[in-house]
Image 1 (tube, rainbow, N blue to C red):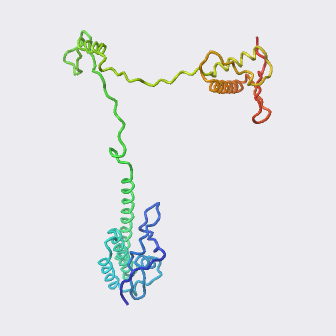
Image 2: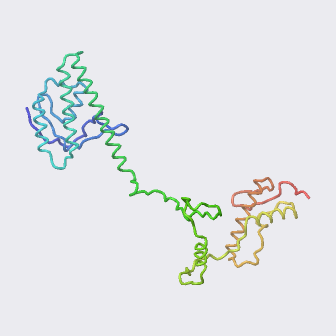
Image 3: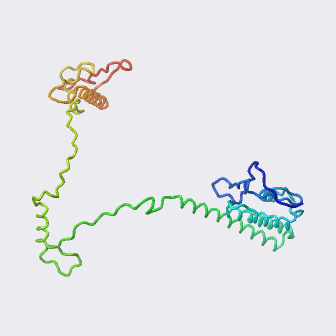
Length: 294
């Protein structure tokens, strides 16, 4: 019984552990493109046959490898143009593994020829794994940002100016370039010319100055109140009056509240004041931790 049919859609074929990249999931071929081999004693895909042979679930000695190779050649000729070349190469690698396993069965056990064949098989497997790792590394490097295309080097500092050696005993044969002091002074004076044709007169935005209430002022006000009346009081009673400022009233009051609260928290952290609040959203009360000295 021989022939090639199209593999019907179904569950993906078992992965080949020897062809998997380290640290990644085993590669799975598209089941719709895998050819199905029909020979005496087996009917299925090539990777399925290889998996059964490695787990010793099928007798390779009963299979006709001539028929298998003929069907593989026909499958390669009849494969569609969309089948990648690498996938066809995987078919050949799996067929080579099957031939090697069949050749090991034909050799007597514990003979130099069989040991040599096993050594070559291990070496081939190592080369295939290294090839897969190299391809994975090349793909990773290709996905990295490319210097000069995606990323660029940081700019190097420019060496501005020339060394000036104006000492009386300077040697004229020095390798450092010499600077004419007179020409340098004339060039400097030209920068202070009154010609404003090339001057930059573009108006620049300057935000208006807002006379807000600051944290240092709030701190001084709290300490001064402790000296005058060392009693507990609401923090709101220490708000300063608004005077001598053109800042909108709502904005100035928010700045005063913020500065006063920050200053009180800082004084409590330093052990100067004590803050209390009966419940959430209730008035905050402040008192000196100890009576001020003097």
